[in-house]
Image 1 (cartoon, one colour):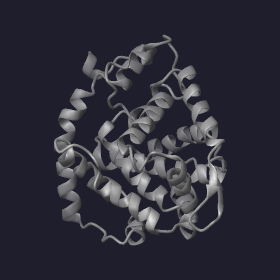
Image 2 (cartoon, rainbow, N blue to C red):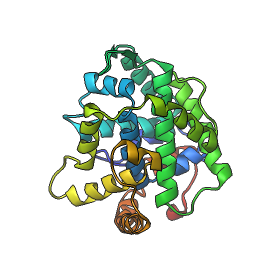
Image 3 (spheres, rainbow, N blue to C red):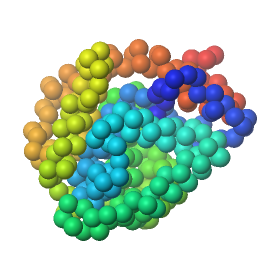
Length: 281
């Protein structure tokens, strides 16, 4: 995710030649460079994650998510940026920091069942819902779309990151990811806690000036969900006209955002490894 900190992301310029975990030829560099579709994918992944009671419990008990949604999403965005575009040292520092925090996150979910943030099963759920949602958002809202081979390559690349976070037996293709998500469906529950998260995302807390933009991004995030999820969250599946209207609106608002972020994290990382983007020629 290449969105904005307060200034140019100069930390991504060093050390020269360090390709990081993935490198500029990776599909991860391509997918994660688009801030708009990553925001959309981030919303849908949070909805999916909220439906797993033990995964949600860690956020519910140990996070500022409900009181500081923007801050939480900003920290997640930096983690994605640092692990995708950062040097090897930056990426490992971010991974080690999150893994260390996870060591202290334990408790009981809303049904009294124990959970731990280091549980490989929960880490896998977070990983597969994020990667699926990010790729789905990219395919819906970016051009040109990825080929089936490129889509599978994305999951193969991201599998490495998920394993570094402690997840096991992660899928390496789109088909395997969809199958893995299906295997979790019996564990999902849309109770009061999950409903409060969905309501928060549906009515994103922000300033009046940013409200229309974030309302659209949130709507697109919900439309980015797999069809089975709508029944779970008790919402109707959007029809073709609704989807087309939202897609057209996202296309319009994405133009100035993408232009403003041309010199963001991804561009700085390309300079670090000596690759020049087409808009820089």
